Length: 580
Image 1 (cartoon, rainbow, N blue to C red):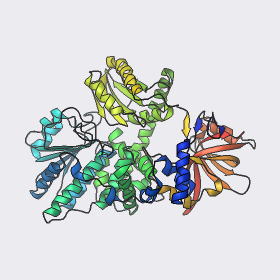
Image 2 (image 1 turned 90 degrees about the horizontal axis):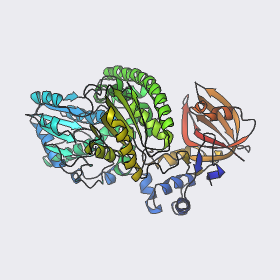
Image 3 (image 1 turned 90 degrees about the vertical axis):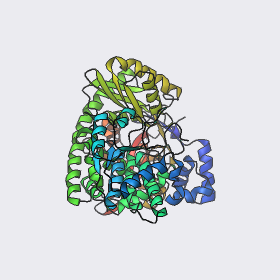
Image 4 (image 1 turned 60 degrees about the vertical axis):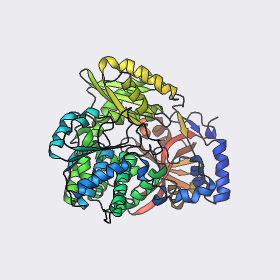
């Protein structure tokens, strides 16, 4: 039976509450840790025992940061890097065009600038050059540079790296490795096949940061000092959240500390971008993933590929403002393109059926810069791994997003090895691929088969998972601040969702094109404001606006709303069901 008896909500979903095991763990935490029930529910879901609760709520980077030398080739990479620094050699950074690539590049550019070195930045064009190193670009860079550092790419780039004759190459990456590695000085990647996989959750910026930690250690051993690394954690946090890396282990501490650094507003690029995105409160993981990340990405998606890395690495406020303005404009343009592709892809996927192990769509002329975002939307709609492909002539370029527990990157790589794709790769949660038109149906059929073996397609697409119930009077700013200590929330650590049972709608008003602002009451003095984004895109908006005095169960996430310098608690409403 559904949680609170909800088998079909206003948006057609079944509500699922915590398991009996999680409930028992919650009760134990309440007794032993003495924390509010809502906080204990989050800790129980994360599997945190009572004795570790205080340490989990205050993660220390010093305790959680892994030893960089646990990764193969790390010492070699840092030694060659420092040799180039000491000898003032020409260094080029070849970066991927997304937030993780841009942040990784910025980490190196800023660190090297503080050491007195200017560095060449090269970011390939998504459409003309595609993902990762290509032979002409590497050849050209090698002609005028001593060292090329590939960040967030390069692990599978055997031929392009071989083309970099006359220059040394270091790869700092996190994408899945193949059976052999390219011939270069070092490939530092927690997802190499000969790695344990213990650090496989790191994004590329996390790997780059650990290389800088190792470089700092080697400098200290030589009696020298490097730049302050803590001040760079805002870049690591942005990349980790925007790349949907799981917020577990060291990632959690990196993001927590990075958000504190970002709040100090010291990096011109992030200050200018936060202002253009109209952020009016201290940064959190939502801001990184949904306000800043998409804008940084917009350059690589539909504009100039290096805009994001340039913004994140600049020390000029004037340049930062100009770049952030341009990225904001490109992001608006990207949204328009995305909406058109999303409507067509969703229609096609629905015709094919959203209950298969894989949801996919392919179309003529779909912009390669938005297929990844559209795949993400399909994944959310169906609770299934999703692939979206745009064709230009006979060649199709696609992007995929996965759900928790299903390794999409490994399956895509297997397809490429079986000859069903021109090329493909990625990591657990996201992957890219290139194929020819006649490969489309066989490749999607085979991918569906591989994903089904991992359990894709078993979860109900309509399930809404809830952590427990909460009454409006208990939803205070203090409680939200305590819950936030169990964060940051994101991939593999979803923000807690609560059900607020049996409430009346005191006030309902449509805002914008499709959003709904509400005031809710329990009828005995407890109340709460709520906002339901996109409520009028489905039946929820009309039903709650024309409630006729009916009572409802509401479900969503608590947040602090800042307006005119004042703070109040708000429910970000995701679903509602009529209370029987």
